[in-house]
Image 1: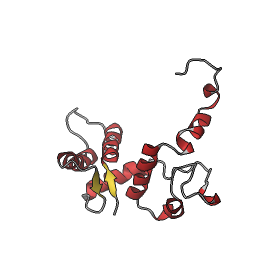
Image 2: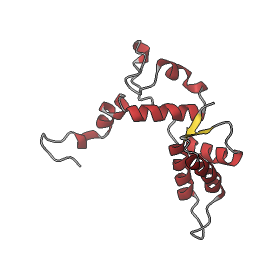
Image 3: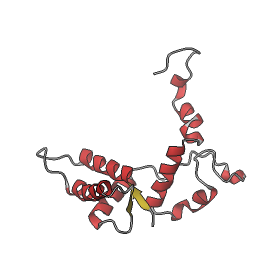
Length: 146
């Protein structure tokens, strides 16, 4: 089984904090408390990944609720694995990851997302992202960028 990255646990905690804020400024909702237990143990033991299979049910359900609102696939509809590339130029996934994506667990999918985000070499992180910004990115040469 894949592991759930510490960054995802933290993101899920923050998502739940925004979604269900403390009514008294002190008490956190049940989802935050469940995820915080996992997060604290990961920090204490300096573990970057939580075992997906061993995660307490309440924490797993809270994490899955966060996961459901995240984009599923990194695909940008420019797939070079169909042309024989081992690594897709569009999204950064391997040919096997593209082919077996529907079969991957949520934690396995997030692991791929973390890898391609850290690598940041796929078009989704550069050329495509610049085009997606639209006309504002097509400024005159020498113009200051925000």
